[in-house]
Each structure stands twice: as C-alpha cells, then as structure tokens.
Amino acid sequence: MNGMNDREESQRQREYIKKIQGMPQITGRKYLVVTFGCQMNERDSEKIAGVLEEMGYARACSEEEADILIYNTCTVRDNADKRLYGRLGVCKQHKNANKDMIIALCGCMMQEEHVINKIRQSYPYVDIIFGTHNIFKLPELLYTRLESGSQIIDIWKDTDEIVEDLPSVRKYPFKTGVNIMFGCNNFCSYCIVPYVRGRERSRNPKEIIREIEGYAADGVVEVMLLGQNVNSYGKGLDSRVTFAGLIGEVARIDGIRRVRFMTSHPKDLSDELIQTIADNEKIARHIHLPLQSGSDRILSAMNRHYTRQGYIDLAERIRREIPDAAITTDIIVGFPGESDEDVDDTIDVIERVRYDGAFTFEYSPRTGTPAASMTQLAKEKVQPNFDRVLQTVQRISKEQAARFEGRVMEVLVEGEDEKDSTRYTGRISQNNVVHFPKSGLKIGDFAQIRLDKCKGFYYNGIVL
Ligand code: 5AD
Ligand code: SF4
Image (cartoon, rainbow, N blue to C red; front, side, top):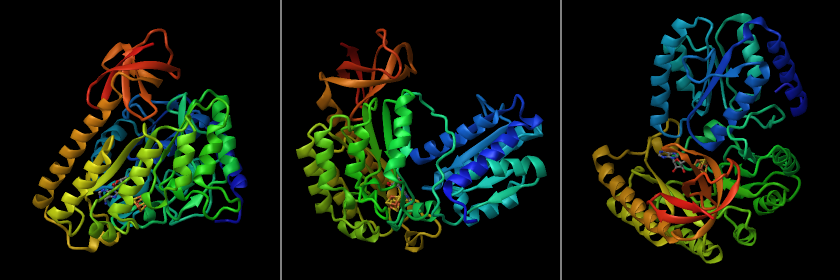
C-alpha cells in the first residue's frame, strides 16, 4: 500500500483508536459483532471486538441495543448470503429508532463486487464496508465515518501485509484461535475462498510463538492453530519450518495443555505431522480432513489433487499411528456432473474411513468459480443423494462415538450445560462434547471424566 511496514501501520491505527477514545460521542456507547461462518471469522471478530473495546465501546447484549453493529460475513455457501440480507432488513428498524447507530459490514462476502453493488443500491443505510484484507484499518475507517458522516467503502483485492499487532478480546478466557496463515492457493473449483481471502501467506513462527506465550501467561490453556490449509504452512518463509515443526513447538509452550488445528488438506498432510501428533499427547486427537467427494472423477473436476485410494490410505495411516484419533470431514453432494454412482463412491469412503463426525453440504454455485459455469444438477436429483450421505455419516459417527463409552478421558471444562445449570459441558481431546456434574470444578479446568453414557453425539460423564 503506502510503503509502511506492518508495525508502523498498527501504530498508525493506534493513533486513530486514541482519537476515537477522546470523542464525546463514544461515552456510554455499545458495540456488537455478529459472526457468520468459520473459525477464521470467529477469530477476526475477536480482533474487531478488541479494537472497539479499546476505543471505549462496551459489549451490547442484542443488535437492538448496539450503537455500532458489525456483521462479519461468510460467502462459502449461498445460505450464508441470504441470512445477511435478512438481518440487514431488520437493522433498518433499529436504525430508525437510534439515528446515530452505525452499521458496518466486513468479511468474505464484502470481497465480491456483486455484493457491494447490491448493498450500495438496496441498503444505503449501511455506514462502513471493509473486507478481509484490511480489518486492521477499522479504527481509521470508523474515525473517518464519525467525522464525515458519509458511507465508507474500503475493499482491497489482495494483500501481502500481515498486521497483527492490535488488541483483541477472547470470547473464552481459557481458549483461543491463532492465525498461523492467511488465504488459500488451492483453487478447488467450487470454492470462493481463494478469491475472497487472497493468496496463501504464512506468519513468521517466532511471532506465532510469542503471541501464544502471551496467551498462556494470560490463562489460555487451549489454542487452535488456524489456516485454510495448515499442512502447507511455512511455504514462502525464509526459515524452513513445517507445520509439524511449528505445532511441536507450540505444544512445548508452558501452560498450553491442548493444541488443535484446522483445516488440513489431504494432499499435503505429511507423515511427519502424523508422527508428531502420535508422539505428543498435548496435540488433540482430532484431525479434520475434508474429503469433499469419494469419486475420482469428481475429485479431479473439483481440482482436489488426490484420489479416493490416496485418501483412504492416508486415513488408514492416521488410524494405525494414532488409534484414538477422531477423523472428521466435509462432504459436498451435488457437484456439477455428479452421478448416483459417484455418490455411491463417496458413501463407500465414508464406510471405510468411519468418520467420527462429518459436515454434509449441498453444492452451492459461487459466482466467479470454475464450477459455477459448469452444467448444474437439478435440485430434485441432489436431494435423495444428500439424504443417503447424511444418513450414512450419522449412523457411522454414532457408532464411532460409542467406542469411547466407559473410558476415562481428560476433559476441558468449557461452560455451563445450557439445559442444566447444575452441570458443565466440556470437550475431550477428540472434540466430542461431554456433560457432567459441576463437582467443584471451574471453567477452564481439566478434569478426569468417565464417559458413562454415549448419547449419540455427546456423552454424559462422571467426575473422578
Ligand atoms: N458449495 C458447497 N459446499 C462448499 N464448501 C466450500 N465451498 C462450497 C460450495 N460452493 C464446503 C466444503 C468446505 C467447507 C468449509 O465448505 O466442504 O470444506
Ligand atoms: Fe476452498 Fe479448497 Fe482452499 Fe479449502 S483448500 S479454502 S476448499 S480452495
């Protein structure tokens, strides 16, 4: 951009934060960040919230109560887009009741030109629009809006900047996500992410470690390392660090008791990583390994760069080396040209790998991706296949969950059980949820829990 380095840029934004702190219109004001989509967006929202709190805004409990309302959007599938437009309609009423209310939009959807055009035309009461590459600029954009009163749109097509040195608030005091890389270079033919999140760039390992050491000193016991394809972490950096090397180092940080990561691409998951996990109890026994399809023909049309057999072999290696690991996945049904036989192949892989959990998505054409201009399947053709896949993954993940029934597992206490305030909810290393009596434990503690009863997707447990 303007030749500044990342530290100078964050310093510049800090100056705007100071200016806003001094503005009379901030006193007593509240903010709310509403997040759609994945963990990347969750993490970005924590950064946005951190910056707003630093300015002096307090957290609002509802959209109606907010003086600044930010929607951090997702566009990976069409239903996420629709949800935003629905919410924006309701916002207009809130804004009529509170004239000074500021509505801001950011996130992946804002990187699409047709979205910006639609908002310009149909939602003129939106005050600030920014994208995925310039979240750190929020202080400057908000200051400009407060001073000028006009609509501000600032979208960057791509960036090689990584400005991380700004405040963030954590949704949970005891766990957080940590970005280790941004963007994606894979261009799976159905996927909008490479267009809206830009080219892949890895953060410097020293900065990642320093950040996590800071969290550990502040009471964080679990971190999730975030990237679209963590297995290719380190490409393009001067230091020759691999993802396996990085995660091993993170697990050595004092105070960090559990390390998760998301997401793995099967084409890049190394034996070194499998071994690192197997050798290190602090690394979660959970690998999310998106399959997308079990048919070679469809995998090739999706540009996934692996075959069904290659995937099955990889899953077998994981099961052999880390027998307790949970393997979860994402599956798309209804990709252009997919036949019933292709779906049979997907179901066959599900039965061989025996997923501990799976998200099943109906294919959704995204403007600008190669698959969107292929001949699309009729909805009526997709639905029965979607149901077949869903039934298979549900049956198998129930059976898989039963394998831990009766076992004593380490559980991180994450919060009160929503249905019973005498109980807590937590997660085992494999990511399954457990409910258990409070028994004098605190949120953020680790406890030994016997998983007495498997209830399909969660367990009821007893504290030992
Ligand atoms: N349609 C349906 N599902 C999609 N995903 C990504 N793009 C699409 C799309 N166009 C799914 C993939 C990915 C997950 C995050 O979302 O399964 O792994
Ligand atoms: Fe999308 Fe493929 Fe990149 Fe995942 S790896 S974000 S599915 S392009």
